[in-house]
Length: 78
Image 1 (cartoon, rainbow, N blue to C red):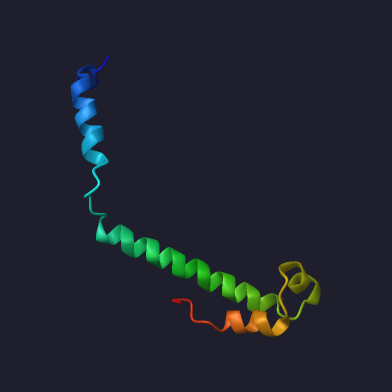
Image 2: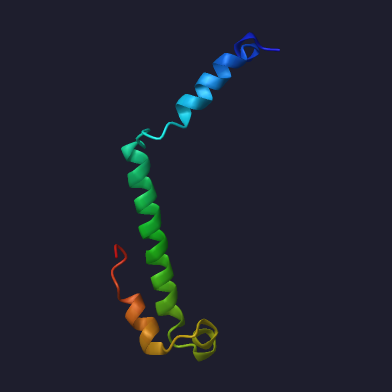
């Protein structure tokens, strides 16, 4: 057994410090999360635009062609 983890008090302190309520997330992680979310929205809206002419797929989604194109035209950052 490693001497680092043999002391259970040390593990408790590490775990407690990692889950503090006032812990601020790294700003780079926040930016990456926002970029990934906007990228996903961009791909979803491009997909809506691609299926706008297929009435069967639109019926599966419960959308009209106009609704799909309207959603596809919304900027990805909204």
